[in-house]
Image (cartoon, rainbow over all chains, first blue to last red; front, side, top):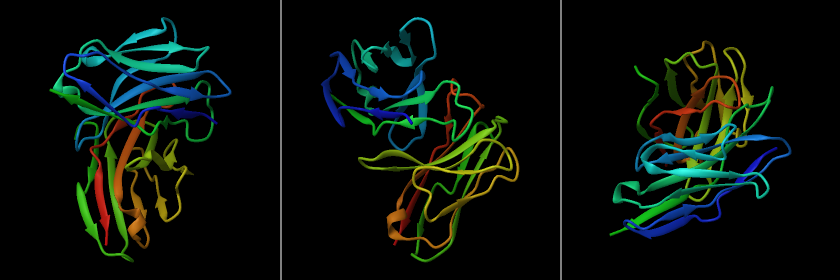
Length: 117
Length: 113
């Protein structure tokens, strides 16, 4: 079974500063990795995903993430944040080749990104 | 309808009452899921369905039941609500395969009093 750890429950950052949201995963097989964003009072939407190939993936709203297999990490970064980036961010993993069970996503507990003016 | 629709948006429910949360998708996705979101606990899987006619238990299934009579609908039923079921409930769907993303509804905020 896989698991996801988001090391920070809350990250305060000043506007226009860079940010990194940390995500580590555990799995006995190869995985696919996702970051989702949840704006206040809304459902989750996909920010970016890593399936294969280049370990640096770019997503919407200027976010990017880097897959590091040796460190089993998939940290999310943005070079300059805006007030509108205030949201909950969830890292998620699914196993490659999963043929049974939920075939769904295992989520981390989320990181609340707080942008300070 | 575009994507996933959940109903109701919010509900206050007396303990002991029966309640069905509705979820409908128009993307013809095989897989559907119900999650509950609680502060500090993230998203926890309640039940899932990999295809119409099949369902399975997730991480926190007790007190909940689901059915999947067709591809589009995946209702979640609380047979006898308890206060610990106060939560925000999200329905999601995705095509089969671990490399596909899930699409989420807007959520149902349920308060059991």
